[in-house]
Amino acid sequence: MGRNKIALACVMVFVLALAAFAAAAAEDAAPGGEAALGQESGPPTLSLDEAISLALEHNPQLAAVEEDISSARQTVLQAVAVAHAHLDVTTMRMTPVDLPEFSFQSPDSTWQTDFSLSQLLYAGGAVGKGIDAAKRHVASAQSIYERTRQQIAFKVRQAYYRVLTAEEQVQVSEEVVNSAKEHLRVARLRYDAGVAPEFDVLAAEAYVARVEQALIAAKTELSISREALNTVLGVRLSDDTRLVAPPTAEIPEVDPDTLEAEALAQRPDIAAARALVTVNEARVGVERAARKPTITAGMSYSLRPKTTIPGDLFGIPGSEIVVSQNSGNIVLAANWSLFNGGEVTAKIRGAEARLRRSQNELSALELQVELEVKSACLLLESAAAQKRAAEKEVEQATEAHRIATLRYQEGVGTSVEVLDAEANLSGARTRLNAAIYNLNLAVANLDLAVGRSWIPPAGIDVSEGQR
Image 1 (spheres, rainbow, N blue to C red):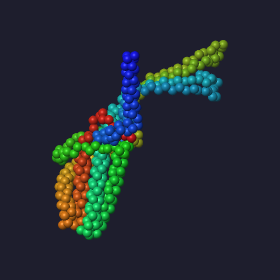
Image 2 (image 1 turned 135 degrees about the vertical axis):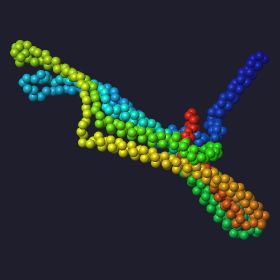
Image 3 (image 1 turned 60 degrees about the vertical axis):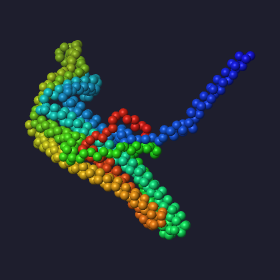
Image 4 (image 1 turned 180 degrees about the horizontal axis):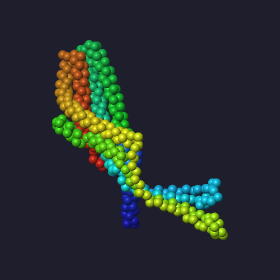
C-alpha cells in the first residue's frame, strides 16, 4: 500500500507540472503575449541606406529608364540581323479563273510554295556602322540609367534629411510650448501674489498662443515631409516607422579644380553625352554608305503542282503529258543608286547636323557640370560656416535665457526679458536645425555634382519599414 501511495503521489505531481507547463505555453501564445512581444520589439525603423535601397527597387522613374536599356539592346539585335542570311517562305493557294484553251496551269485550285534565301555581301560599311551605333546607344542608355540612380539616391537623402529636420523642429517646438506654459504658470502665481503686473500674464498667454501655432506648423511640415519621402521611395511607410539618424556628415576637402576633373571623368550623364556623339558619328557613316553599291547573293526555289496536258495538243492522240513546274534561281545582284534626286545627300547633311548638335550639347553639359561643382563647393563652405555660427548662437541664447529666467524669478527682471530670451533661443535652435539640414544637403549635392555613387551595398533587408 505504501508503495502504491508513493506512485500515486508521483503521478499527481507529474500531471500538475504538465498542466502548469501547458498553461504557461498558452499564455505565451495568447494575444496579450503577442502584444507584449510587440512592445518589446518596438516600432519599425528605417536607415538611410535602407531608404535608398527601397527607392532603387520601387521608384517608377528608375523602372522607366531601365526599359530604355532593354529597347536599346533590341536595336542592337536588329542591326546585327541585317548582316545575317534571310530565309523567306511564301505559300499561296491559287484558283484559276477564265483560263485559255491551252494553258500549262491546272484548271483546279492548287498550292504554290516559294523559298527565298538572301545574304548581304557588301553595303559600303553601313552594316558595321549601324551595329556600332546601336551598341553606343546601349552604352548611352546605361549611363543615363546610372545617373538616374544617383539622382534618386540624392532625392532620398534630401527627403530623408527633411523628415529628420521636421521631427527635430517638432521636438523643439514642443519644448518651447512647454517652457512658455511654465512661464505662464509662474507669471500667474506672481500676479496672484501681487508681485507682478497683469501685463506679464497677458504677455505670457499671447506668447503661448504664438508658439502653439508654430508647433502646429511644425507638425504639418513633418506630415508633408513624410509624404514626400513615401513618394520618392515608391512605397508607403507605416506611420510609426522611425527614421534612424545617420552619422553627422563629414565635410570633405573642397578643391574645385580637382572635383571638376573628377566630375568630367566619372559623371554618367557626361558619359551618355559622349556616347551619343559616337552614335551620331556612326549614323553619319551609315548615311554616307548609301553612296556606295550593295551586293547581295540570293537563291529562290518555287514548288508548284505538276500539270497534265492531253497529248492530242501535241499530235500524240490518246496520251497525256505530265509537266513539272518546279523552278529555281541563283542570283548575284549589285545595286548602285546613281541618281536619287538628292535624297542621300539630304540624309547625310541631316546626320551631320545631328552630330554637330550632340557635340555642342556635350560642350554645354561640360560647362554646366563645372558650374554645378563650383556652386556645390561654395554652398558646402557656406553651410559649414552657417552651422558653426548657429551653434555659437544657440550657446549664447541658452545662457541669455538662463540669466533672464533667474532675474525674473528673483524679481529684478521683467517678463518681457524672459519672453524675448525664449523667442531668441527658439529662433536660434530653429536656425541650427536648418543649418544642419543645409549642411547634410550640401554634402549630398556635392556628391551628385561630382557624380559619386552614394548607393548602399546589396543585401540590405528593407522589408521592415514597409506596410
